[in-house]
Image (cartoon, rainbow, N blue to C red; front, side):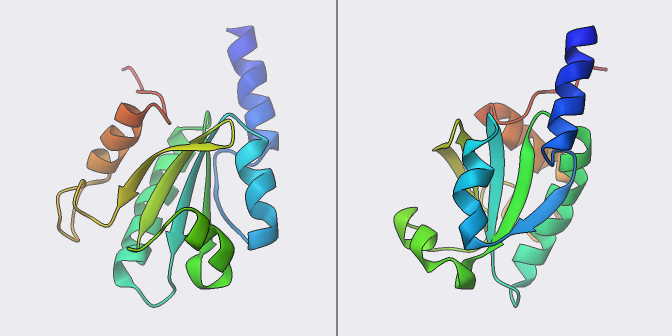
Length: 135
Protein backbone atom coordinates (compact mmCIF):
# COMPACT_ATOMS: atom_id res chain seq x y z
CA UNK A 1 0.00 0.00 0.00
CA UNK A 2 2.87 2.33 0.83
CA UNK A 3 4.46 1.58 -2.54
CA UNK A 4 1.18 2.39 -4.31
CA UNK A 5 1.01 5.73 -2.51
CA UNK A 6 4.58 6.55 -3.53
CA UNK A 7 3.77 5.68 -7.16
CA UNK A 8 0.66 7.85 -6.99
CA UNK A 9 2.62 10.84 -5.64
CA UNK A 10 5.35 10.39 -8.26
CA UNK A 11 2.74 10.24 -11.01
CA UNK A 12 1.02 13.38 -9.75
CA UNK A 13 4.37 15.23 -9.82
CA UNK A 14 4.83 14.09 -13.44
CA UNK A 15 1.52 15.62 -14.55
CA UNK A 16 -0.79 12.65 -14.12
CA UNK A 17 -4.33 13.21 -12.89
CA UNK A 18 -4.92 16.18 -15.16
CA UNK A 19 -5.51 16.65 -18.86
CA UNK A 20 -2.97 19.07 -20.28
CA UNK A 21 -2.16 20.49 -23.68
CA UNK A 22 1.31 20.06 -25.10
CA UNK A 23 3.09 21.50 -28.14
CA UNK A 24 5.16 19.66 -30.71
CA UNK A 25 8.45 20.21 -28.86
CA UNK A 26 6.98 18.60 -25.73
CA UNK A 27 5.62 15.53 -27.50
CA UNK A 28 8.62 13.19 -27.25
CA UNK A 29 9.42 14.04 -23.61
CA UNK A 30 5.73 13.61 -22.73
CA UNK A 31 5.42 10.13 -24.22
CA UNK A 32 8.83 8.81 -23.18
CA UNK A 33 9.14 9.94 -19.56
CA UNK A 34 6.25 7.89 -18.21
CA UNK A 35 5.11 4.32 -18.80
CA UNK A 36 1.56 4.95 -20.09
CA UNK A 37 0.40 8.04 -21.99
CA UNK A 38 -2.85 8.80 -23.79
CA UNK A 39 -2.48 11.47 -26.50
CA UNK A 40 -5.49 13.12 -28.11
CA UNK A 41 -4.79 14.70 -31.51
CA UNK A 42 -7.45 17.34 -32.00
CA UNK A 43 -8.57 20.32 -34.09
CA UNK A 44 -10.03 23.46 -32.46
CA UNK A 45 -12.99 23.66 -34.85
CA UNK A 46 -14.17 20.05 -34.59
CA UNK A 47 -17.06 19.42 -32.20
CA UNK A 48 -16.20 15.76 -31.82
CA UNK A 49 -12.72 16.73 -30.62
CA UNK A 50 -14.35 18.88 -27.92
CA UNK A 51 -16.54 15.92 -26.91
CA UNK A 52 -13.46 13.68 -26.68
CA UNK A 53 -11.76 16.37 -24.57
CA UNK A 54 -14.66 16.33 -22.12
CA UNK A 55 -14.49 12.54 -21.70
CA UNK A 56 -10.70 12.38 -21.37
CA UNK A 57 -10.77 15.18 -18.79
CA UNK A 58 -13.13 13.07 -16.67
CA UNK A 59 -11.15 9.85 -17.10
CA UNK A 60 -7.74 11.34 -16.27
CA UNK A 61 -8.82 12.36 -12.78
CA UNK A 62 -9.62 8.74 -11.85
CA UNK A 63 -6.64 7.12 -13.59
CA UNK A 64 -3.45 8.67 -12.28
CA UNK A 65 -1.45 5.66 -13.45
CA UNK A 66 -1.57 7.17 -16.97
CA UNK A 67 -0.67 10.61 -18.27
CA UNK A 68 -3.33 12.27 -20.46
CA UNK A 69 -2.36 15.01 -22.93
CA UNK A 70 -3.76 16.63 -26.03
CA UNK A 71 -1.99 18.22 -28.97
CA UNK A 72 -3.33 20.46 -31.72
CA UNK A 73 -2.95 18.50 -34.97
CA UNK A 74 -2.46 21.70 -37.00
CA UNK A 75 0.58 22.61 -34.92
CA UNK A 76 2.36 19.25 -35.06
CA UNK A 77 2.51 18.22 -38.74
CA UNK A 78 5.59 16.03 -38.21
CA UNK A 79 3.87 13.73 -35.69
CA UNK A 80 0.59 13.73 -37.62
CA UNK A 81 2.48 12.43 -40.66
CA UNK A 82 4.73 10.07 -38.68
CA UNK A 83 1.77 8.49 -36.83
CA UNK A 84 -0.37 8.49 -40.00
CA UNK A 85 -3.26 10.40 -38.46
CA UNK A 86 -5.99 10.93 -41.04
CA UNK A 87 -9.17 11.27 -38.95
CA UNK A 88 -9.85 13.49 -35.96
CA UNK A 89 -10.28 12.96 -33.14
CA UNK A 90 -7.56 10.34 -32.85
CA UNK A 91 -6.46 9.08 -29.45
CA UNK A 92 -3.19 7.14 -29.37
CA UNK A 93 -2.02 5.04 -26.42
CA UNK A 94 1.71 4.88 -25.75
CA UNK A 95 3.65 2.50 -23.54
CA UNK A 96 7.29 3.36 -22.85
CA UNK A 97 7.26 5.81 -25.78
CA UNK A 98 5.85 3.34 -28.32
CA UNK A 99 2.37 3.70 -29.82
CA UNK A 100 0.48 0.46 -29.26
CA UNK A 101 -3.20 1.24 -29.81
CA UNK A 102 -5.47 3.98 -31.11
CA UNK A 103 -9.07 5.14 -31.13
CA UNK A 104 -10.02 6.80 -34.40
CA UNK A 105 -13.15 8.92 -34.54
CA UNK A 106 -16.24 7.80 -32.66
CA UNK A 107 -16.77 4.32 -34.14
CA UNK A 108 -15.57 2.41 -31.08
CA UNK A 109 -17.39 4.48 -28.44
CA UNK A 110 -20.74 3.86 -30.12
CA UNK A 111 -20.54 5.99 -33.28
CA UNK A 112 -22.68 8.79 -31.82
CA UNK A 113 -21.82 12.14 -30.25
CA UNK A 114 -23.62 11.41 -26.98
CA UNK A 115 -21.83 8.36 -25.68
CA UNK A 116 -21.19 7.66 -21.99
CA UNK A 117 -17.67 8.20 -20.66
CA UNK A 118 -17.79 4.59 -19.46
CA UNK A 119 -17.54 3.31 -23.07
CA UNK A 120 -14.30 5.21 -23.66
CA UNK A 121 -13.00 4.14 -20.25
CA UNK A 122 -13.70 0.48 -21.06
CA UNK A 123 -11.86 0.80 -24.38
CA UNK A 124 -8.81 2.29 -22.64
CA UNK A 125 -8.92 -0.49 -20.00
CA UNK A 126 -9.14 -3.08 -22.78
CA UNK A 127 -6.03 -1.64 -24.45
CA UNK A 128 -4.17 -1.85 -21.15
CA UNK A 129 -3.42 1.85 -21.05
CA UNK A 130 -5.44 2.36 -17.87
CA UNK A 131 -6.32 -0.03 -15.07
CA UNK A 132 -9.85 -1.11 -14.23
CA UNK A 133 -11.08 0.35 -10.96
CA UNK A 134 -12.48 -2.31 -8.67
CA UNK A 135 -15.29 -1.39 -6.34
